[in-house]
Image (cartoon, rainbow, N blue to C red):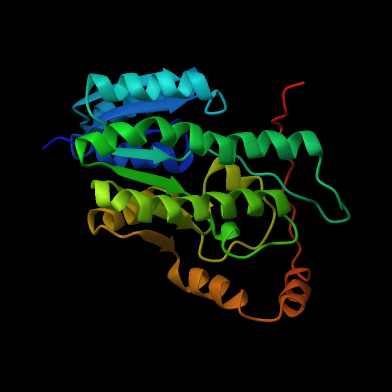
Length: 263
C-alpha cells in the first residue's frame, strides 16, 4: 500500500529529509512550507527520488483557519496515513543577555506550539472516523529538561511533549497512533546558527532514517541519541540547583529568531 504523508516544515532540515526518505519508498507526499522556492526544490528532489506523487502548499502553521482548510482538503482528496507536525523555529539567549525579546518569544510560541495544534487538530476527527492513522509530533531534547540559555524554546517543546503524551492515550482506542520525536543535535540550518558544543550531532538524513525506522516499529517515543535522552531524564531527578550550576558553565549562544509577533 502506498503511504500518504503530510509534512510541515518540509522545505529544509528534518522535514525535507523525511520527505526524501519516504519518497524513496514511493510514498505520496503533501509538503507544506513558507518558502515557495525551497519547497518546490524539495518537491523536485522527492519526485526524482521516486515519490508516487508530490503536492506542495505554501502555508503558515500559525494561521489556524488556513491550516484547517488545507489539512482537511488534503485528507478529503486522499486519506492521510502519517501526519508530521514538524515546522518550528528556535530562539534563545546569548551570554550576558537576561531577557528574551517578548515579540520573538511569542512568535516562536505561535509557530512551535500553536502551529503544532493547528496542524494536528484538523486531522484528528477524520483519522478517528477512519479508525487508522498516525500523528507524529517533533519535539526536542530541550523539552525534557530546561536549559538556562533557551527558556521559551524549552517551554514550547515541553508543551508539545505533554500534548503528544495526552493525545497518545486518548486516541489509541480509535486506532490512531501518536508518536513523539525527541531529537538531539541535528545538522540543520537552524542548529547551524547555535554556537555551542553539540555532542552526538548527526545529519538530517540520518535523523530521518532513525525516525522512519522507529515509526515502522510502532514506537511511541523516538529519542536520539539515546544516551543524551536518558541523561536529560536523569538530570530531572537531581537537585535542580546542581544541574543549573553545571549548565551555566557551558558557553552557548542561541541566536534570537527573526520571527516577530504580529503587531
